[in-house]
Length: 122
Image (cartoon, rainbow, N blue to C red):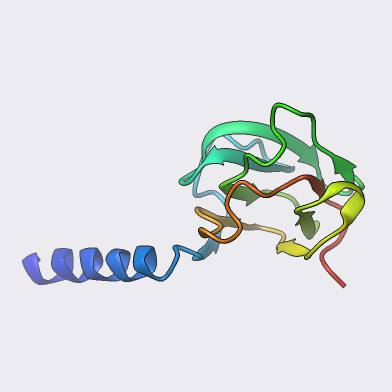
């Protein structure tokens, strides 16, 4: 048992060192309602900032949540996406249906300005 506990800690440490960009099946958190995409202020799904229904199109976020996203959860049947700039501009990032990301990584942390839940990146 001690071996497995050590192994789990080692794998977790590698994920953190590698930037933490680990995708997991959605449901890793309970505070994102079923049928919604959500994004959070902090890593680990802490500080829910916004939700959107599956199928909803792109929109720019309000000033208080602009450039604040560190993790996301997609509990819809629709792929989603987010962008670092207004009006769906800049590098497109996928939010796969049924998946979540507990930390987007240092490079993409606090960058979301536009998001949509009606399809992934082309």
